[in-house]
Length: 306
Image (cartoon, rainbow, N blue to C red; front, side, top):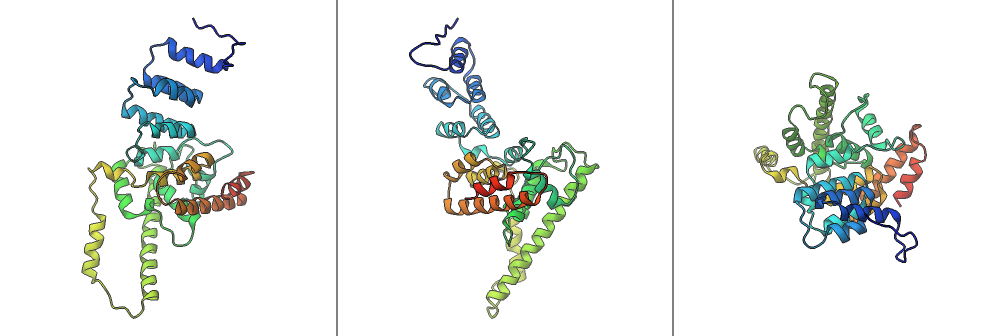
């Protein structure tokens, strides 16, 4: 039995007293204790009672806690988990990033799903699962110009298709509406590939009109085929070389300002990341302003882009 004195000198809040009593009075594992403190959003108690000498947590448990912290928008817990050994390079896989993009948004915050629908120019099923290829198309649309997202490149699509198989775990049958949407994905990506090649050739002809051809068509084909070779069995192909960059874009598209600032401060190329985040936020604000469904979102995103 734990007795709580309201008039005690340490001025401890009753919720803290209850949580500490739960941690001390049960034989819960370190992971269960971490989950409990995460649910209560008490990073201070997690730091003092869970991440202490003698407590052992499996890597898989820490990564699950990281996923929960990202979904629940617990920035302090994300920071604490990184400080206690979670490798974001190991953590962030294609499947996990896609799961994060399918985190349930608030009813008044459907911007990303609306953008996917507008770009596909088709009706989406109620339980539609956003794919990373969808996200890539949204990013290209928001960035504008000749920007090309990694998620729409051929190499990534090869990895993605082999990882998910023909039936992409999207809850839709191959012959149903999902297969039509997948075909749309593929056609969008094929068009993007053609556009990229056209832009590249046009740039070469414009910038260097008198320069002789550097590579024959055979050499170009060899180079292209070499770039398209992907070792599917290599687990590194399922991860990202710059996980903080990917998570920053995720946080911006999900309109999580504090999380965006945190990921901007970590990793490489802070200036480039800031420019991308600013452009995405401004473009999302413009799109939200055009929409008659989302209120106040455009002003919020405009403020975030500053």
